[in-house]
Image 1 (tube, rainbow, N blue to C red):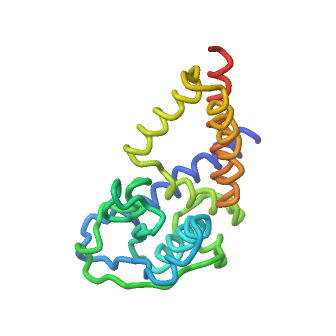
Image 2: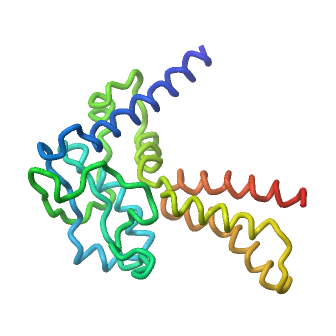
Image 3: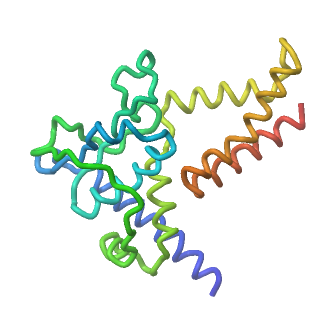
Length: 211
């Protein structure tokens, strides 16, 4: 029975992921409606609040059958990221661009709205019912996929944290402390995101002990 339950759970993860991909990667962008976050109020939020709101923005778009786009943010680096979009740090949420849609709607911020688990399960054709937390985790996993540039940077930084510091023990101590803070900070954004960070940091710590 446990094996069947695990199989059903993993099968539903794959089904929901496939549904998200279909919704966000339509065959004909010109026949769809784009969902774009209005800038004014969003830019007044803290970074953590902005990241949390992305998930609810995606949820709102999915429930309306629209295609969600990651918004711009004043926290992005204008030199390294001229577009100022979170696309610089995460994989694009869609194969479409706002310019390719039949119509684009500018929407206000979505914040801590209800997650209709029954409706989402039905839309995605899931085999089993799941709690709201399960859907939060799936939406988070879809949105916060590091871009190619970010993955390269993470590999570079991971290497620097597991090698001897040529400058001073003090700077290494700061780096190690920062490493420990990452899961805590990300957990404040989303518990599922924080758990992923904890596992990643645990792997880094394990590698570091062998050097």
